Image 1 (tube, rainbow, N blue to C red):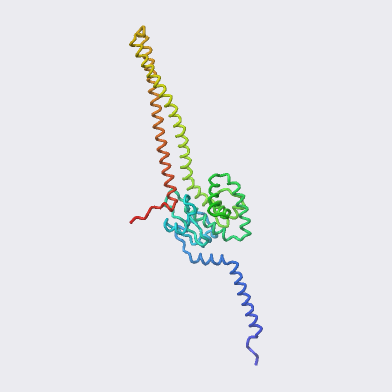
Image 2: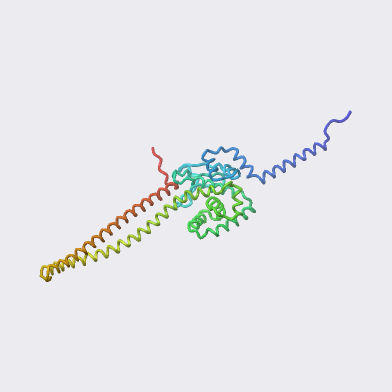
Length: 333
């Protein structure tokens, strides 16, 4: 009778293969731990309609959406947002944050700033993507980012922005550049654009959204600067003309008094001579009246410009309040 039991050598071989497969699986899990965690996180997350819209409007591709959803992004009202996102400087509002696990986005209530939540969400997603790069890729990307930074450093607003990050997040300049350039700068090197294409099907969409709401602020500032310059110029003109007018009035009154004294003393030999001098004074009075009216018109124009400037200031203040979660209205009872 033949022996049908499996040979010990075959069983040993199978066990050995299983052992090595387990070792290999554990190794692969170790080196791909973040990818596995991200996949599990994505499977466990159900994005809201707002979050889906953010991803679509920002031009994210499947990889960008994957990293975005892996962070379980959420849109929060002021009170909850302030608990999740620490304000680094009280004078500067923050719109979103990424804490290494989750993304939080402030639900900016101002409808005039359409796109600001999408850009914020994408900015934070790029932080998550940056965290997931290996050191070799980071070094390559950092070099490209620094080249772009060199082109932008003369921009006053951009330099102030990076100075803020230097104060509040020292050592994270390239990380911040990765998010800022990726969402706000249209023209970049082909090499850096190729890097961002890993996350975007059309990066131009998120840049356009940024330009859209940034223009709301910049247009108000430009108009305010123009009006302020007009006020300064017109104020100087009114002051100068008022000084000249007052001097002319003083001289005119003196000349009228002198004319009346001479008329009473019989200094004019003929009526025609007296009428001629009186008519000259009347002409000067008419010119002074025209000058006075012109100054009044300029004052009225000055007040109108000042009122418009105050209105723009109020609009700017309202915009800034709307993006500052710490200034949200207190809840009513």
